[in-house]
Length: 417
Image (tube, rainbow, N blue to C red):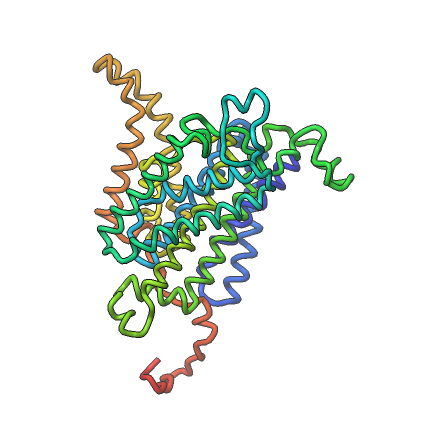
C-alpha cells in the first residue's frame, strides 16, 4: 500500500503543479505549484485508501495510455498548433517510433523461435537507449519526408503525409524480415519490470531491494505510470521553453502569415523542417513508450483512425496552440474512447431486441461518440477547451515595470508599450 501510494503520488503531484502554472505573477505561480503538488500527493493518499483496488488499477492503466497519447498530442501540437503544418500522418511516426524502440531493445530470436519470428536486428539496448533511438529515427524519417513535401501547400502536404503513413504501415505489414511482418513482434522488454519480480533488480542497493519486495507483478502499471509521467512532464517543459523562445515566435509567425515571415528575412522552409523533425521526435518517444508498455506490437496498432484521427481530436478538443490543452484533450478523448467500450456492452441487449444483427455493430458506437465530440467542439468551442495562449513569454510580467498611479509608462523608441 505504501509503495503504491509513493508511485501514485509523484504523477499526481506533477499534475497538481501543472494546474498551478498559469496563475499570474512569479511568486503566485511558485506557491500555486507547491500547493498543487501537495494537493496531488494528498489525492493519491485518498485514492489508495478509498477507491477499491480493482478500480484503482483500471484508472492507473487508463492514465498510462492517456499519458502516451498526450505525448503524441504534444508532438502534433508542435506541427499544427504552432507551425501550421497539416500533418495527417501521425500514425506513421507513431509506428516508426514503436518499431524502432522494439528493434533496438529486443534480442534476435534464437532456436525454434527463429522459425516463427523474424526481425532485421536486435541490439538489446537498455530502455532509454531505445527511446533515444526512436526519437532519432523518427527525426531522420521526418527530415527525409520533409525534403520533397514541405514545398507543398497545406492541403497537398496533408495528402502527402497520409500517403507517407500508409506506406510505413504497409512496409511493416508486408516486410517480414524487418519486424515480423503481419505477425506481432513480441518480447519487447518492460523497463524496471524487475522491481515487481522475485528476485528483484540486482543493481538495487540492499535497503531499497528490501523495500520493493512488497511490489507484485500486478503493481507494474504504477511503475510505468511514473515513467510516462516523467516523460510527459519533460516534453511539456521543453516545448514550453522552446515555443516561448525566439525560435517559437518564428514558428507562430510562419503559422499566422508565412509571406510576412519570409519578407522579414526568415528561412521559412528551414524553420518548418525543424518543427517537423522536433514534433516527429516527440511522437517517436510516444511510440517507444507505447511499444514497451504493450510488450507486443504489430502493424494493426497504427491505423489512421487509432494513430491519427484520435490524436487530431485530442488537439482540437484541448486547444490548438496550447500544450496544456493538448494534454487535457488527450485524457478527455481517451476517456470517451475507453468509456464507450463499456457502453457497447450495455446497449447490446437493447440493440438485439431491435434486430438480431445489431449487437455485432455495437462496438462502432465508440467511433460515433468520438465523431460527435469532434462535431460539438467545432460547432460550439472551435478554439478548444483552453484555447491558444496569447502570452509570448512567461517572464513578460516579471520584466514589465510597475505602473505608478496617475502616470502612464513612457513610450519606447518603437512606440508605446
